[in-house]
Length: 112
Image 1 (spheres, rainbow, N blue to C red):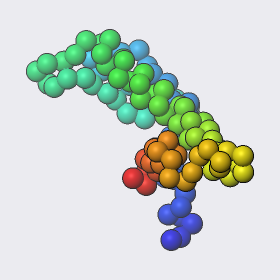
Image 2: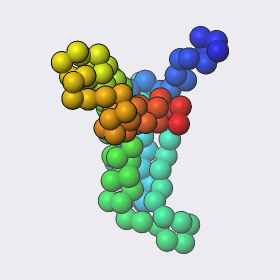
Image 3: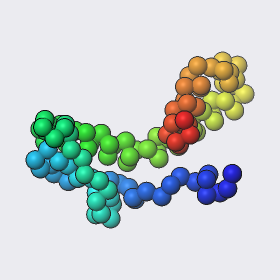
Image 4: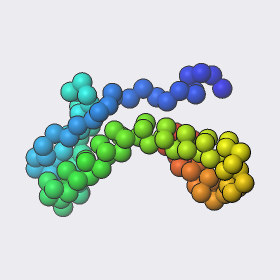
């Protein structure tokens, strides 16, 4: 595996921001003000209200903006819990919580 394959793809810099919705369409912009993408809720014949579109955009923006911090915190927590001699008395590598955390880490990294 090359170093290029180990690093995450380059994406628009965070934080991402939500522009005010208009006619069932929200725009998400990057920290540099460039459009990341537009988001519409519902199909062509059943547009959802601006509030639904804005809520969807807000969920995406919160997930993107907190992704790196949450991933780092979970990785550190798993590392601490599995490397501490004291905690190893209570938590094994096969612990369901540790397994679930590792699955979540893999998903967040795009490996699952």
